[in-house]
Structures are given as structure tokens and as C-alpha cells.
Image 1 (cartoon, rainbow, N blue to C red):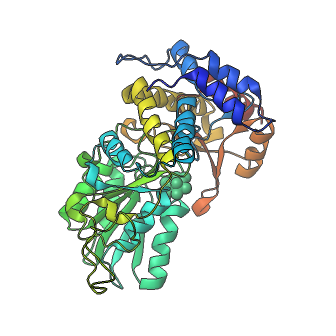
Image 2 (image 1 turned 180 degrees about the vertical axis):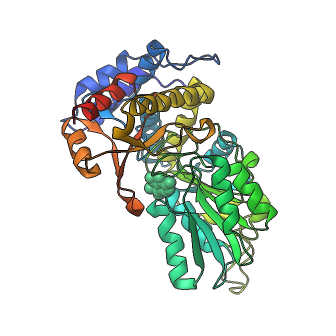
Image 3 (image 1 turned 30 degrees about the vertical axis):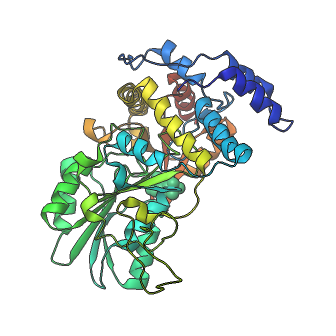
Length: 426
Ligand SMILES: Cc1ncc(COP(=O)(O)O)c(C=O)c1O
């Protein structure tokens, strides 16, 4: 996709309220849309990646090392949202968001009829959690590293339906993590509901092996994939889980408030849908002639969402996939893994003054790293980093009391160095 940048500047600047720095738009005007032309880009080719950085309006005043919370969008995505909204607001056009199901499906290794559009990861988790046929006493295996978005729906179901949650702590190796899950499985276990990459320390859990184990034992397998797409070369079919919930507003760099839930085709009659409306039906109901007959659900994962969606936001999702594919998912993965490795290397140089809590095992690490600084409270250092214009994340969840750095393609080694220098000083 090659949006006309000059039009973007003119139209956007013309319609925006006063107070927005023109320099942002001039920056956009001066950048050239970038493509790897299908070639391999070396992970530390700073010239190429600094051109990529130019495509983001993200301020240069702050070292933004918190992509794990929110992925800033590049200009082409922002422009696609604006244009998508104008289509509705100027011409009265309605609909069209289903096209994103296909695009997302191709991007994550699924079929179009296995993708339900959602507004965030939490939506997808709730649909999965409440749709599973679980009874009182049924056990669900989870981690001690859950984000509130994966913890709270299951805790709620525990409270309201009496299911039982069993937890394990992810280990420093994928093999040991798998052992820990395996040792929790018993006659009452019905489901595994774990993150692909926990928000706390960013380690990659062996989702494929976990799914294989779960399916061999006859369990439902749900993956909270908040951090999968856009960071990893994701192939959900290859993973083999039943359900995978994610969003487009983190590593995919898409519009905020967009996401999807994957539900395996042959699992759609097992996962009950509750939240239904326009699009989740098969148009066989008629309240005038037969108010008892509801027909059936849509024959695809569209059954899990209904009603009007934001066509503009989903145009932005399409543009974010184009943006990623223009650069190449492999190139992006290599770059962010290199930056994640650089963070680890720098933290390890502090010796025992820093506790790196993310595994260094090759298959278990990528773009997110968690750590603690000996002798300094995590919230004190967080405040210090903010004062110094470095944005990271505190991890108070589950009593972990640690810090997290997450780096994407718009980051540079020098931004990481800024943080490392500050750690050195304190
Ligand atoms: C692992 C994990 N799960 C779930 C969520 C919730 O995501 P959302 O805010 O898109 O619902 C997050 C958000 O950071 C997360 O990191």
C-alpha cells in the first residue's frame, strides 16, 4: 500500500485542530515509504531501521520502551484509519470490516472463517472463557504470570460457576515449563488457558508443545496471544490450539481497540457463543412468522461477534499488515529479537546487581525483558526512568514487583543505552 503522503499532510493538517505540531506532519512529508523489496535486511542495519523509524509520529523526546503495552502506529496506518472513516462519514458507506478477517487469517496462519473480530484481547478471552462447556469442579491450568485480562475472566468463572484454577510458574526452559504443566494434569483437568508470551517477563511459552500435550490429554487449549502477532512468525494452525485471542494494537502496530479471536473450525460447535447480533446469525429467523425458531449461528467464527464495527479502524488493521509485510515479518522478527538480545546482554553486564528474570534460552526469548535492580524498589526506578524521559513498565502483577522493557522496530540501540546508563547511575 502506498498512501499519498502529500495528500495526507494537506488533508490531515487542514482538518486537525490547532495545537498539533506541524513538525510532525513535515516529518511525515519528508519520509519515503519503505520496503525491503522482499529482501533480507540485516538486523543491525541502522540506516534501514532509522528510515523505518521516520515512519512513526512517535515523539523523539521520550525513549519509548513499552511496546508490550501499546504499539504506536506508523503514518500509513493512521492515514488508512482517517480514510476509512471518511468513506463512512463523507459517502455514507457502511460495512466492509469482514475483509479484515481474511487479511488477518492469512497473516496469522488461519482460515478466514476461523477469525472473529474483537476490540482487544480481553474480548477474545471472555468469549473463550465463557463459551467453554465447563462444570463445577472442572480444572483449568494457568500460570502465576497472568495479565489481569486473562486472570480475571477465569477467576470470575471460578466465582460464578465453581471451576477450579490450577497454576504453575513458567520455568527458565521450555522443556521444564512443559513438565510443570504436565504434572498438573489429572482426571479433573478440562482446559489449559495460558499466555503465548506473558506480559510480566516476556518469555515465549512453547505454545505448540503445550497444545499437543493438551490435545493428547483431551483438553481444551486456549492461548492468550496478546504478544504473538507482529513479534513472532505466527502460524496458529501449526500451533494446534483450539482458540487464540489477540489484538492488533501491540506488535502489529495497528489502531487501538482492534483485535481478533481465532476459533478452530471444528471447535466452533463446542465453543458456545453468547454475544450475538447482526452477522452472527444465518438470517433464518423471522420474529413475525415464527418467533420461536432462531435458525442457526453463522457458519464461521463470525458467530462470536455481532453488530456495527468501526470500518475505519479495520482499514487501519489492513494497513498495518501491509506495513509489516512491506518490510517483511522475518526482517521485523530478526530486528526485534536482536534488540531484545542486546537488552539482555547489557543487563547481564551488571552482574549480580541486576536480576534478569526473562530466560536467555534462544527459543524462549524475543522482544520483551523483565528484570529487577538489587536494592532499588521497582516503582522508585520506574519514577526515575519517567523523570528521565524513558518509558518502561512496572510489573506489580502477582507480586512480581519488577520492571519490563519491550522494544520494537522503531527503537534503536541508543535508546536502550539511555536506559542502561540510568541503571548504571542509580
Ligand atoms: C498477556 C496479555 N493478555 C491480555 C492483555 C489484555 O489486552 P487488551 O488490553 O488488548 O485487552 C494484555 C495487555 O497488555 C497482555 O499483555
